[in-house]
Amino acid sequence: MCSRGGDSDEECGYKEKKMGLKILLKLEKSKILMGSKTRMKLWMIRAFSTVFLWACVVHLLVFSEVWGPKMLKDWPSCCSHQDLPSLTDHLSSIPPKVVSPPKRVYKNNGYLMVSCNGGLNQMRAAICDMVAIARYLNITLIVPELDKNSFWADPSEFQDIFDVDHFITSLRDEVRILKELPPRMKKRVELGMFYSLPPISWSNISYYLHQILPLVQKYKVVHLNKTDARLANNGLPAEIQKLRCRVNFNALRFTRQIEDLGRRVVRILRENGPFLVLHLRYEMDMLSFSGCTHGCRHEEVEELTRMRYDNPLWKEKAINSELKRKEGLCPLTPEETALVLKALGIDRNVQIYIAAGEIYGGKRRMESLVADFPDLVRKETLLDPSDLSFFQYHSSQMAALDYLVSVESDIFVPTYDGNMAKVVEGHRRFLGFKRTILLDRRLVIGLIDRYNNGSLSWDDFSFIIKESHADRMGNPIKRVVIPDRPKEEDYFYSNPQECLQLTDDESLTKSV
Image (cartoon, rainbow, N blue to C red):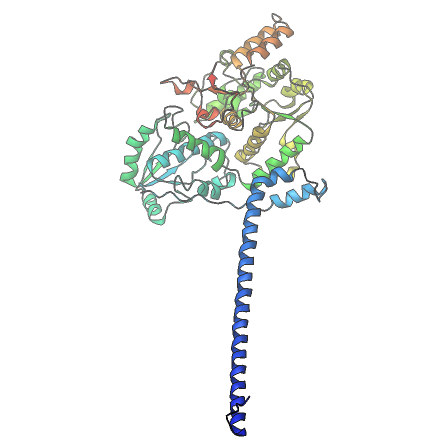
């Protein structure tokens, strides 16, 4: 609008046009500013929403970890019970994600090679010992070599029985383990530039510190060619004992194939109710080695004796079978086992899984046991031959299956205190003192002979058997320590008391 100052029309029009442009410019600036503020608000809203949603997700995950199993276990499922097995099978086929512990950093003093000897469970205990020794000496352990020259002549390698990758990674925070020597060290071994020896049996850790470690530092590679019972049961640092347990109960996991088949056997047994595992150590090799021939025919005694004399690894040749039996140093026969199970009050209809190889004497020796307990089964009767074809001629892999079933059983009864019986006993203690009937064979044999000759009634026989074994059920006890006589004291792996969790109602009592 023009003023009244007499401006010409042209000047008036110019001023109005200029003013209009200014107004338009202000409007445009205002729109730009408003648009900028709007975009800023939208960006802030989006950013806040994203942060809020992530916070919700994190809280829900934490909530489900802590409360989910408790709160959701009683909710109705969208799947029927018939759907669950297939879902479980599908999930079990997916390997769980394992978080490896951080590597332990230490100055490596050298490399330790070991050749295990004996059966599966003797080697299992030895591997635990070797890991503990390597950890204490700050040396690198090469994956142990398994025995292929024993009576069983099993060609299995470590990785055929145990999950070797799990073994290595699960212990990386304690000790460095390699599948093979580095090329430079392997060349030294090929040239004979290493030291090989059998360590002294039942040695304490100071022996390895003062005798073995200097050899490792000098030769860089040391080979221990014997591993059975080479570390003491007692008098070791608590961390060494706990590491032995960690290797035994966590790091030494069987291969996926063995684990799956073992779980399958347990599932088949569980479908028919509780089951007892009988470790009936009455195979040909056991009888020949021990010289225990009670109940055998004359030709069988000759066969077993000839086999013992022909085996250069078995040092004891002339053996008095009956004297050894009365001392409780022989495995129970199938006939003796049937009497003891009946006397203990074991239900005749219970499933009994025989964890053993071929019973010497076959059906003839098993007649009384089958008559008293008709529901006897074995892995060979529960599975198809095709399921076990892979394990044929691999006794250690077969023993691994029996080990898994034995650990999971409701009751475990070994008829001889060999390596499997001892290691399974310790594992069952670790799992919560599961019922394990530890037979006093010396007492049992004396009672059986008295019952058989008529000087002891069945009621008295059964009463004494029950009373004498009431505290021999795998309950918490202290290991018996006998200084300077380690063979006669309690075996560490049968009662790893340093690693056992006791409840408020449980306490360690002295072994009887």
